[in-house]
Image (tube, rainbow, N blue to C red; front, side, top):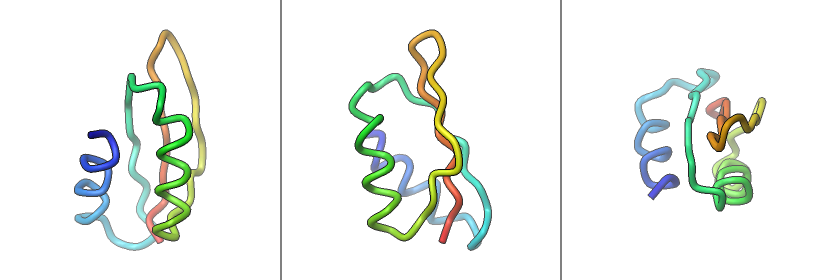
Length: 60
């Protein structure tokens, strides 16, 4: 589900805008960067704190 929700959120952004995504699904560590690369987007930053993953993704 994280990929589906992230994709929908990205659809409303303009090119160059950044989406901040908060997740608890550990699979997202691999899934979000792979999905971003496939779509031409750029993961600017990734952090993990207290079981929460945060990604900042720049829309292509």
